[in-house]
Amino acid sequence: MWCEFSSIDTEYLIEIQNKVQSKLRGPEFKIHLTLAGPFDQIDQSSIDGIRIYCSQNSPIELKLFKYDYQEKFFQSFFVAVSQSQEFNDLRNAMFKINHQEPTQQFLPHISLAYGDYEKTVKENLITSLPCLKNSLTIDKVSIVEIDGNITLWKTLECFSFRRVLLV
Image (cartoon, rainbow, N blue to C red):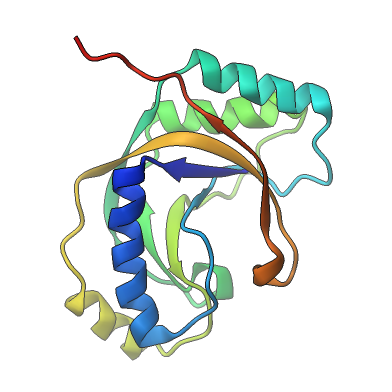
């Protein structure tokens, strides 16, 4: 399960991702934040539960922390984010709806590149990137079929949060 962002924030992240990819040249993938999973399967009642949850809840503000990296293929270069109570509630709700226990180890982040790169290359890249905005808006939850081959990943369902009317 992935969180996806408002269209303005998605454009912002893609701009940064393109700058990162121009230097690192990793595999292409859709910008997202992994929320929960992987799940062996998600039944129709869980899909309906996610749809209802999203229709009854408002978009979530996600605080950005910093550019960061690890020596792991899928956490190679990313934007670290803060775990707010609202975000943790969303994550826990997705596990509960799918009748699963939340995994204990969780590093919420928005990947900008996958791959194996030298630490110095990543450190130098950070200095060339723009300062991060304070926050982004999560406005969708997607169910994604993940395959070992990144090019075969596909979104099966996408649910938007309830729109907030500004008066």
